Image (cartoon, rainbow, N blue to C red; front, side):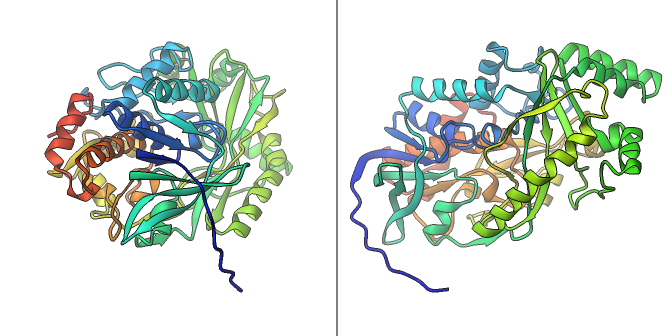
Length: 451
């Protein structure tokens, strides 16, 4: 492959205390926390809205890891505030969240999600730049001093005392030459929305295949929460088998993560639902591979719809929107001062520099009951990339230990934004700030650290 050398003369658009790159479930809480702590803050987002995978990826539901399954709330702060704001906008199922750590799967309207996230950051005084694609970090002696980015008008730069990498891909960290490992065999999903659905009939079909007691509990849960998730292959195996026998759908095995290929979820009475669409595997960084993956995924949607239309309540459904971008599970793992592992999560590891907590327990997934009460802490060191100064990172790229769920991302984002503000006003690199000061500020903001 040949190479070219570029010489750029880039105008500096602004100079701020904190620059957050990426406006997804990590980025907008980070920007919000930084601004609320007095830092002048710019949020740079490559899409035309905030939310990242939750909105542009149509991953319109997050597993609410707010509690430990034993009645104790383990997460607080911005993610709770945001969830309550969504609930107030009628964008969540009824009784979706309770202070005791409700575990109802939170399926939301992505368009309301965008607006609420935007309202919250603007209320805090964050300047938002949409459709701005980060290009490279501004470096001096191993320290990130901001980022250059590309817009329709051309290239610009923003100088910042502290930068937060919330890109999900660890792009800023990687381009700043922080050590990282590529997730070369990751998976991504192309989500899409279908209309003309009747989830009441779908719920009845699911319950008719359950034992009587289980069916009664299921329908009671559905009536109370008004939200439904169905994996066709496992919840409606007879319908799936008929589709395979007729040649409408291939006999696809489960993927390596153990999840069936196709699921549908939505809110009752809305008339639409979201489909966990085709899953693709390979590098989520290589431009040629990702382009092929996305085109291949589009080709498989009609096949999936032939199966979907066999489900009661979905017989007359049709596709009205395909996600603008793939929902990527992993692309890079940036090496931080501490790398969380699957063992940390399974064993509920505790850390003196904790800046948040997580738990994998979900009552509707029996396979995960073993995590009930297993609360783990997220250490500040896991957000500090090695060999680079002036930079913090949160989100799916910080660990192979599967801390990428949206609630964890928001917890990490709030910690990053708060630390970035402290770093800026103390004129210290993020790895130098006093952790007890950070923990005190997070606690004052409502975060639950478990200390």
